[in-house]
Amino acid sequence: MTDGRRRAWLLIASFGASAALLKPVQDRVDARFRQPSTVLDVLYFGSPRVARALALGYNSLLADVYWMRSIQYYGRRDEAARRPVRYGNLVALLEITTELDPDLLDAYRFGGVFLAEPEPAGAGRPDQAIELLDRGIVRHPLEWRLYFDKGFTYFWFVKDYAKAAEAWLAASRLPTAPNWMEALAAMSLSRGGAVETARALWERQDQESNRQDVKKNARNHLISLRVDEDRWTLEFFVERYRKKFGAWPARLADLVRVGLLKYVPHDPSDTPYLYDPATGEVRLSPATGVLYLKIPYDYRAAFMEKLARAFGPN
Amino acid sequence: MRVLAIARNTFRENIRDKVLYNLVLFALLMIVSSLALGQLTLGHTDKVIVDLGLSSISMIGTLIAIFIGISLVSKELERRTVYALLAKPVHRWEFILGKFLGLAFTLTVNVVIMTAGLILTLACHGVGAGSCLRLLPAVYLILLSLGLTTALALVFSTFSTPALSALFTFFLWVIGHFNGDLLELGRLVESAVFLRLCRVLYYVLPNFSNFSVIDSRNVIQSAAYYRPIDPWGVAWATAYGLVYGSLLLGIAIAVFSRRDFK
Image (cartoon, rainbow over all chains, first blue to last red; front, top):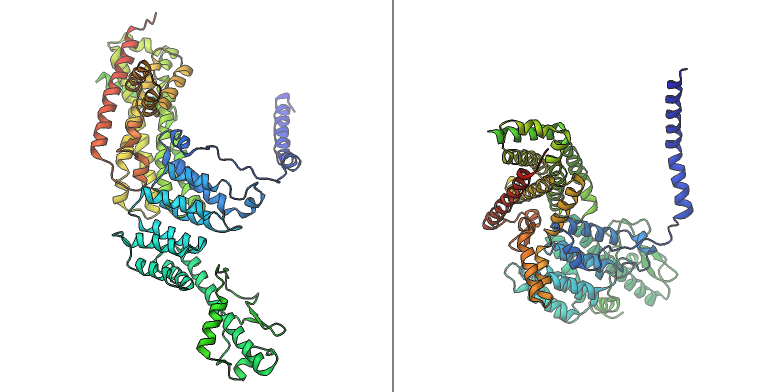
């Protein structure tokens, strides 16, 4: 073998060895020095105005980058758990996004939801969500959806029905607003109308939205409302059975046998509800296809009273 | 005619220097963004594609304008081809103008191909022809801005080294986006002299925000929402580009004409 050829083989061998060693060495460094205890939670720009000044005319692109960062920041639940403050920087990210692109309506609308959702799903800061939506309303005073979302935040997360109605009434006065907005405001103001308004809200979102994820979320909420009401109805009749026969029924079918019910309802995915004959409790089966979302209203007592009125005394 | 011959040669030289390879990068960017953006963002995928496309056209164009612009004259001096050229009946102003037009044409070809790529990507996402047409004023303004950057690089190229020319051009390009803040700064400091100095600088330094902001709206942002851009704003930006560009070319010609090649 000539010297030149030997050198070439040596070069190839050393190149191959380096390439083969690259991954194990990097993995070793990662394992030894980069413990994933906390996640780096860096904003890069503290002030939205500084970000705008430094964008050098590429505001729109930078806004997209910050919007995507906001979505990822919110969406990565596993990472959020390892941050010093779960969603501490979310509001700043959304402020930078909307300062860079004041017309990005989704940043106000979905950003508001990200901020308002209670922990652990969101930042649990409906006050910041309302501030963000208010900034959007100042910039887009004719955009009824922002008023709708503000009302929604007051209604759903703050439970201030008067403020919600105020926002929806303001929306109903806008020329582009749909005509059901006024009815929504009236419903919110009506006494005990919280659940009915919630149902109307989700039905509207299901019908009006052109986004499949929004529709799906609305349907899941409607289904969850139905599941709660099914369970409570069954528990109401289980209790009646106990009063009549002195013991819990052995199974739900007993309610039909004694004439209290015409049939035993299944959940919306057509899976039978689970019944505990020791406590009389009815719940969803683990085999269910329903994605149950907890409804933040405790209207069980009011619902039971309604059933008692409808079916008379024992 | 001699100007056009120099311009044609500059264009050919740029092609030989593989300047158009950036188009591959742009195509990859468009393909990857098309595939990945749907996963990363909530709605507005076409808006992000427009933002990314137009910003890339502008950034890639600016890099070409700076790095090719600074070598337009210095490379000829380094290779000593300028001596052979100027020995022929070619005026120095023709040389400078030809060089400028050659690079401007290279940039135009680049921008046209990249815009076509962007429109194709948008068409794949179901964006109609009417909306795509709304991007054209923004593309035109980007092209104007690139022309001015080229002229700026050319000025420095006539008397400085390529490294320093790149640095000067880049700094002026950055400062050119902060011109409005310069006036604000002058108003903040309570000094008549400082205010006057800021005013002078405001007019003397190139104002690149004339091409990126029209009617208080960012041009790329307007295009991304398919909003029309005020034609008068475009016309005044064109006027500014022509006036400032002529001034820069005048300076470049004056400096190059006085340069001693012995």
